[in-house]
Structure formats: C-alpha cells, structure tokens
Image (cartoon, rainbow, N blue to C red):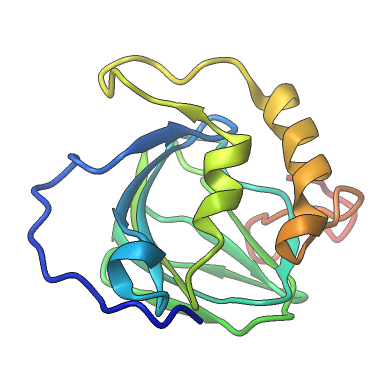
Length: 175
C-alpha cells in the first residue's frame, strides 16, 4: 500500500478519465494516487450483452453498487440478479463476473481495495474521449490484452466457464 497522503477533492460527474472496455465504458472516479493507495473506484456503463468473463482477483476485494439497471452476477456457482441500490461484495480470490442480460444499460460503481488495479485498465483499454460515441467493436482485441496483462496484475480469467446467466437457466447454457 502507498504511504502517500490521500487527496481531498470534488470530481463532477463523468469528468474522470474514461476508457472503452469490451463494449463497456469505465470512468475513473478516484485512483490509488488520489486515495493514498487505499482504493480505486470507477463508474461502469454496461450496454446490453456487456460484462467481463469470469475471473478472480488475487490482490483486491471488489464491490459493486448498482445505480441503474439489473445486472446478473456470477458469484462462485451462484447467480444473482441485482437492481438499483443493491450492493455486491466479492472478497479477493473468489470467482465472479457480471453480465447485462437486459435490453437497457446498467450503471454501477465498482470499487477495488486496495488500489492498483487501475493500471490494468489503463494498459488494456482504449481511452474514451467522446462519451456520446458508441463503444468501438474491440472485444477480441481487449480480450487478448486482458489475457496478456492479467498475470502481472494478479488476475486469472476463466474463458472456458459460462459467465452470468439468469437464475434457473440450464446448466449447459452459455451466457
């Protein structure tokens, strides 16, 4: 953890650095440099069908606070459909992912404790300069960068496992 002091500041909405994920848009709310290494938070805007593959963080706990929409989370072997106001906690070392299986965008705040994982996103994603633009069709390129960079950041992706699907879906169905 960093020994630098946290910075007190106000960041107006949607003014942090933004990046295009694999179809998603991530806007940094507070970085490790600003929190003294304590945590990193970002706003995720996830379009229908968006979300990362199942993965594990070795070094960070991750939380999700749903602002809008109904994302489906894979939490180990369980599936949970969350809604506005819901909070999801994932301790480090636990398999998880989320997927937007609806036809409306999802907005949620992701927080990683401690900070540091933001460097993974900076390295693997494309900078989003125009937030009104549609996300680029870069899923394959981002997936390749994720796979290459993940070990350096204590992450493991499980591309052979199904992501999140609605609770009660057939066990063999992929989503």
